[in-house]
Every structure is written in C-alpha cells, then in structure tokens.
Length: 130
Image (cartoon, rainbow, N blue to C red; front, top):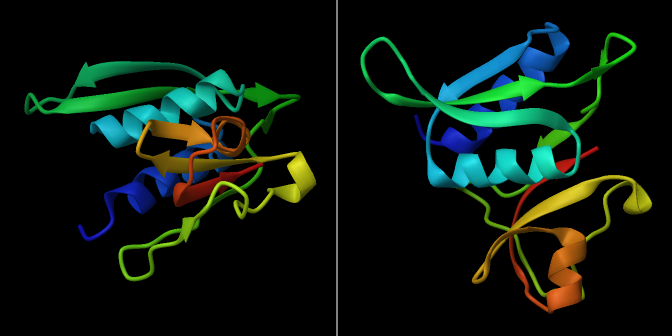
C-alpha cells in the first residue's frame, strides 16, 4: 500500500456511507492522531485500540450519526505521497469558510487549522473535513 492515510480516510468515508457502527483500520500513531482530532471536533465518536485475528494492532473508530446521516459529510486527502502540500500558518486555507477543519502535521504534532494559526505553526496539510 503506497498511501495508508488515504486508505484510512477512505475507510472512514465508506463506513459513514454504509451506516456502519464502527470503522476498523490498521493502527499507526498518525492515524490515531487524526482520529483523535476528529473525535475532539465531534465528527466521530470514541476512538480505541484493538487487535485483529492475526494479532496486529487496529484502530476502532465509532461512527457518529444525526438523523441517520453521518456527521462527517466530506473528507478529502489534501497532501499525497506524490504531491506534498506545505503551508505557513498564515497561508493555511480555510475549509468551507471556517465551517470545516483542516488537519495539519506540524513540528509540534498534529493540529487542526485554527490551532496552527493560534500557535503560529505551519506544516503539511493532511486532510480537510466538513
């Protein structure tokens, strides 16, 4: 697999469209950080670790719905392995004019776009969520 982050985001999108209760993906610290930001912002429910039948660590994300529709209506990968997008904190684009969030990987860790502007930290734009 060349892009495990895109795979994780696609699993989240597909779980929402299929109205699944949980989304299960292979574990990594970056994926766990993205899921924690989405959980803190209210796009998904609880995030926990698990183990699959082979003993590999997995990430279990509880999906969140309002009136039988997923809370997370859009999820787009911005930076790809072939085209990395880096922004200064003043140039980080706003998602839906501030209604969504952007997840940015900075030297201070993963942050949402508003926190990057507040702490004056730029970095790689991972994904946009609304």
